[in-house]
Length: 165
Image (tube, rainbow, N blue to C red; front, side, top):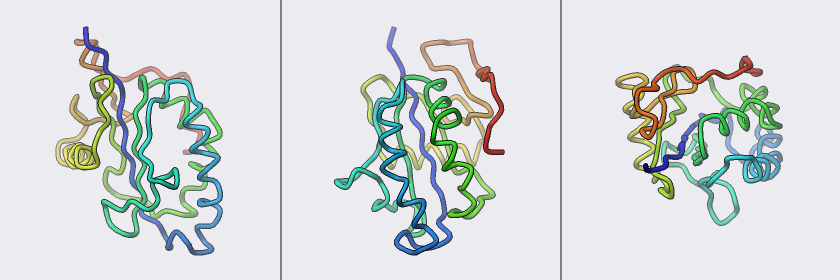
């Protein structure tokens, strides 16, 4: 049986240029959050440039930052995103980013060892926007089991509510 891992992409529209004073706290926290992700249980890989983050990459436009990573499973990503020091950044996201009215984050399963490309991630996000959550592209709110766990579609039971709501 082939093992699958969870890929994720999220994009955010900045309220100001990355090098401006309104974004200073966000930029100052990048190394801490990236180090936290790298050391988290279930972490596999994250998109980064030679500076160790992805802020210089703008595949969705100059005013967007991207984050793409791979995790062992949805529970590992959920624990990092909503039950670690990452929550502090999530709580302040409205300070730095414009609320989006359409899908800005997508999850999908990849074969173990596969590192997704930005083109693949953009296509998954576009699919989610057009068709809603499916086994091909989904969200935390409506996750799908990995292809190795056929017949287990549905919500993954997390024992807590989103602490950033």
